[in-house]
Structure formats: structure tokens, C-alpha cells
Image (cartoon, rainbow, N blue to C red; front, top):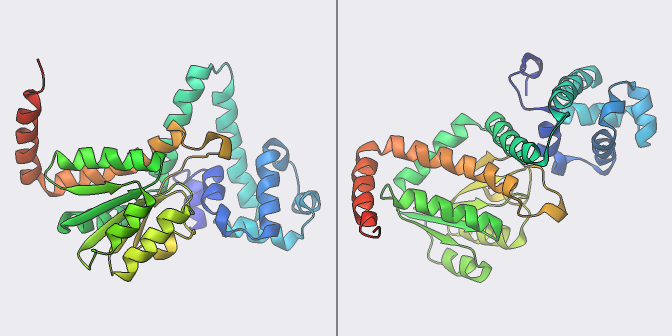
Length: 282
């Protein structure tokens, strides 16, 4: 990522950049990552040498860490940290738990929007639009997001299949071919069941669109297109609504893009669906 973008304000926040690259860090760089998260307010006052000593790593490791997430050096990194810290401090005071939940969701959407690659998004939309064999793979909460996508696309006449059972996912890949499109939803990109199913789909020459939090993960290795989400989630919060919100935001972009691309067909099917559904109302 060019440094001038990082300094203009039109870029992902520092914590988003670190989270996105987390799985790329070496063991030594992971020490720097953990230290920055745990001592956010202290790091801004520390020199390169001080943070290296605190992390028990070399200065070169700290510099590699900064460059790996898109900065020229440590000073650019600290500048971005100061900007985010000022923003956090401004919004943190007098926050109720209702405000906290709302702000977390808004932040997840804003951060995901910052990471959205329009070229990747458009290529994914085009791929889905031209395929007649679309399958969504998702486990647990990610499967729920997939079901929402199915509901959206059925309303515009685009039939997709959502499979949340790992055995069924593997079985479904057997009948895939070059016309098949798999949309794999996984926050970590490391869910073994999803990765195994996607790998099997690729062996059948299916195209794969990944909706995930990380640029480098076992899932993205088998993906033709990657759409990044941004939602921090620790193991105790697995399946949180904030995570699903970021996934649903990407799904909404895909569905809206498809509706615009297939406007006449979408309009016709929407009217027919509305008419049929109306018979279910009193």
C-alpha cells in the first residue's frame, strides 16, 4: 500500500491493517503485534529502540513489522497510531453498553468498507452473474450469513445453494465443473472443513470467492477472488453479531451489484416474488 495513501486519511486504520496481516507475521513480528495491542497508548511515546527492547526483538524486526503492514518506517507507523488513538479517545468517554454495541457494528462496517477492493468486488459480481451453479460454503455463524445471501438472490431470480454441513460440502464438490462458483465464508480463513471443501472444488476447476478477514490464510490460497471483512473477534466471542455484520455488508454489496447488473430480470423476479409472498399474509 503506497505510503501517501496512509497519510491522507483515506485508508484503513492501523489496527485494521495489523489485524488483516496477522497471519503473515513471523514469531518475532507477532511479539511486536501483541505488544502494540496491549500497550497502545504507551507505544506512541517509545522510540524504535525502546519498543524493540520491550518486545525482546531486534530493531530490524520492528521495522519489518511496520513495512509488512504498509508503512515506510517506524515514524509513519507511530503517526498512524496517534491518529487512531485520538479518534478512539474522542469516542470512548461516557459510552454506555448500548453505544458500545452500536459503535462496534458501525466500526466493523466502516473498516470493511475501507478494505473493499472494487476490482475484486466487480469481478466477483460478474462471476456470479454468469454462473448457473453457485454454491455457498459456511460453517456455524458463517453459514447463517450464507443463508441471508440465498434469500437475497432468490428474490432476483438467481438460484444458489447453501451448504453448512461439512460432509455435504465435500459430496457437493463431486458434481462441480468449470461453470461452478463457490462462495466460501470464513472469518479466519482457517476453518479446516471449509478449506478442505474448497480445495476439492478447485480440483474440479470451480471458481472460488472467499469472504474472510485475512489476506493470507489457507482459504485464500485456493481462492480466485478475496473479499475482505474486518471484525475483531477473540475465541470467547466466536460467532458474534459484529462479525456477521461485516460479512453481511460484503454480501449486501455483492447482491446489490448483481441486482444492478441484472436490473430487468431482477425487477421482474422481485415483482413475482412479492406477489407470491403476499398470499402468505393475512
